[in-house]
Length: 367
Image 1 (cartoon, rainbow, N blue to C red):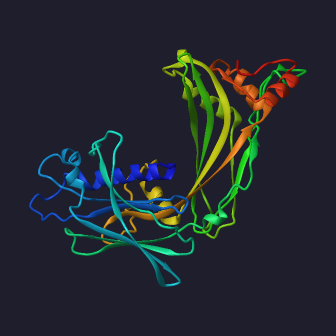
Image 2: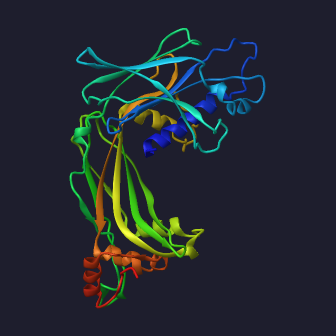
Image 3: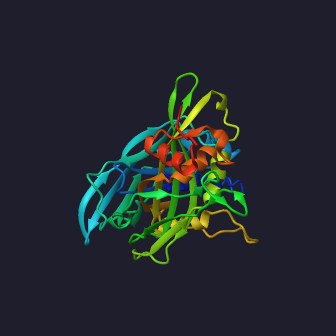
C-alpha cells in the first residue's frame, strides 16, 4: 500500500475502535448499523478499492466482537460509483467483492477481510465521482462524492543527481584536516489542482549479496514528512530540503542490529527513488482531525463526508522519479564514518574510476 493509504487505513481502524468499542451505552437501546466507508480514488492506479464495514455492538467486551469477521460486515451490499462530467452521467462502475489476506495481526479479524473494487478503463481528471451503497440492513442509500486531483500537473519533470555528502577522503581543510562535509539538497515540484496534502517518500535501493549465494533486491524507505499547499488551485512551488547527515544516520538506524548481517558479503548501491503522494482537501481535513493530540485539549471534532455513515471518500495521486548519487555521496556510503561498516559498494566502472581519481586511489568497487 501506498503511504497515504496506509496512514488513513490505520486511522480508519482507530475510528472504528473508538466508535464500535464504546462501553458507555444503553444495552436496551435498539441497534442500528452505521456504515464505515473508506476509499481514495487514484487515477494513477489500475484498480480502485473501497472498504465498507459497519459499526457493531455486543453485550460483553466489544474488542472480542471485533475479532469476529461477521461483526463488521454487512450481509448483502450493492455498491456502485457514478462518473459525471459537466452534469452528465458518463459511466457507472459496479463494485465487486475481493477477500484480502496477509493482514497484520490486530484486534480485528486478520485471516482475511472483504474489500470492494472496480477496474475502470480510465478515470477522468475533470469528472466528479459519486459512491452509492445499498445494503439490506440499511434504510437508506449511503452516498459520498469526490473530485480527482489533476494528475497532469503533478510531476518532478527531471532525473537528478543527489549530492548528500563530500567524503573526507576527497576533501581536506588546511586548518581542520580531513573532514566529512554534508549537503542538504532540495527536491522540488509544483502542486496540482485540487491537491492539498503532499507527502514525499525516499527509497534508497541496493542489492544484498550473502554467503549462501542469495541476491536480494532491497530498499530502505525514508518518510520526509507532509506539507500542505496554500490553496488547491495548483501551480504552487513546493520543495523539501533533505539533510545529508540525517540520511546517513537513517541508513545506520535501519541496518543497526540487522539479524542476518553476518551472512551479508556486500551491498551494491543501485540508486534512489522519490515518491510524491498528493491528497485532496477532504483527505487532508480527515487526517488533520485524526492526528494525535499534542495540546491540552484532547477532544476532537468528528469529520466525515459520507452521507448516512462515517469515514472518507476522497482522492489521491502519486508520481515518482529516479535519481542517482554523486561520487561524493557514494564514497560517503562506502567509506564514511557512519556507514563504513555496512558493506556498501559500487559496481559502476565509471563511478569507481572517478572516485579513485578524486581520492588518489580509494577503491569503492564491489569485489
